[in-house]
Each structure stands twice: as structure tokens, then as C-alpha cells.
Length: 299
DNA sequence: CAAAGTTCCTGCGAGC
DNA sequence: TGCTCGCAGGAACTTT
Image 1 (cartoon, rainbow, N blue to C red):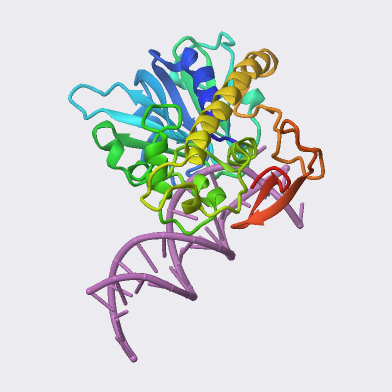
Image 2 (image 1 turned 45 degrees about the vertical axis):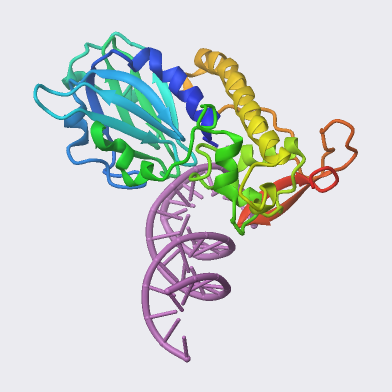
């Protein structure tokens, strides 16, 4: 599930308990997630203070205050398909590394990494499928890192605009669905929000990407509309995540899963909800992934 | 069976 | 014709 809105919601949930605080202890219960965890992962984080917790595309990026003289690093975290964070409240356990227990009585099988923060709260990362990742990267070279180098513009920033999208789509012989899923075109969209945006925009997921731009690679009305709709869809989802964030925090502190109501995704056979449309949502498979759309109003 | 993500590999077509 | 190169599409990873 974690696409841009979910990751942003997680970021907002973690920021208050991580930013400006020291990691008193870190623990990894296995050596790898999707990839091996960094060498001496826990040791390198222990005692370090977290600065800003940011987000780039679907990655969380935490500034780590360096030890004296050392080059600053960032902790990069990705939730993969099934990752989530949980905040375990301060249980009054003495905050020394030796007493760090990852709230052991509450630990479940897929709790892979945890941080005990200054103040006693524990931040626990759970990921059944282990498609997630944690990396330590020199801050100065983050943008050149292979995982970040080719990522496209943030859809909620000014870099994402009709002119840029047109340039990215021009000449591409691939369906618009696949193009929007490509993180080089725009950062942070996944299967759900691509379906939602195309549905709201009334664009067929099978339309060739290049058909949305002029022969000269300039934006059309459809390109402009799509840019606005992608922003709207993501902003609405973040707003919805913010409200579930409050609800969830009261329940069990789990961040990463919130069920927003979708208008197309996972609604096969149900009525199309676009204004004035009497069609039905259908499902098709593109590049091995489900696409939910309305053949009546998406052209 | 299908699943929200990303990388890697293969195969194809364009262009030299 | 033959060889690269880049792009597009699919498999793979793993667990529930």
C-alpha cells in the first residue's frame, strides 16, 4: 500500500517522536530486509541524534547528526509493499542501551528493526514481505545515489508541471498507466493512485503516453488537467491519512496502513462514481498489474 | 489466487 | 548485414 500519501502520513506520524531526539539504542532482528542492512547498522545509529525527517518519493529520509568530524549521513527507509511503523509508548524502562528490549513482550514475528528514542518511546518497523529497505547514505551524495538519481519531480512541488510532464511523456510508446507508474516520470505514484488519477481525469489507462502531448512535445489540455488531478488526488489522500493517523495513534500506534476510500481501485463490477457516468468499473491487467477503470467515461 | 514496490533481465526495434 | 543502445515488458523477490 505505501505510496506517496501513505509514506507522507507515516513521516508526519514519526516526526514528533524522532526529530531532534537521540537514538538511545537500535536493534535489527535479522541481517536484511530487501537488501542487507548496513554494516554495523545498530552501532552506527546508537547515540546519534535525528535531525529532520523528510520524504523523497516513497522514501523516508532522516538526517543523522554525525559524530565529531565524521561525514553526515542520512537514514533512508522504504516501506516496500508491506512495511509499517509502530510507536510503542514509554513504559518507564530505563533508557540505557542494555535495557533496550524493543518492547519485547509486544514484538511480533515481523518486527525487524526498532529504535528506542530519547524519552523512552520505541519506533518499531514491521514488514512481513520484507520488500522494504533501510540504508545509510552520505548526505552529500544522496541525490547521486542509484536509488535517487533518476527519480522524477515531486508531484506536490512546483517541479511537477504540464511542461515537464509533456517532456517526460513525449515519444513514449507505452500506455499512460505504465508511464505514470514510472518513478522517473513523476515520483511517488503507485498502482492505486495512478488508477485513481486516470479515472478522475477521464483518461483511458490504455492511451499511449505520447498521445497526451503535441507532436512538438508540448502539453495538451489533457496533460494540464492530469497534472492538477494527480496533485488533487494525492493531497486528498494525505488529508485522509492525517485523520486516520489520529485514529490509529489512539488504537495501536501503527503507521503505514490506512484505508482511504477509492473511486476506482479495487472496485471491479461496482458503479462508476464519476459525475454523470452510468458505467461500471472494470479490471484489466497491464504489465502484470491490475488496472481498475471505467471504459464508459475514460477515453 | 492476488497483493500496495522496485530491480534486474530479456527481447525488440531504431539507428549507425 | 550486423552491432550497439535504449526502451518496454515481464519475472523475481516474499508472506499472508
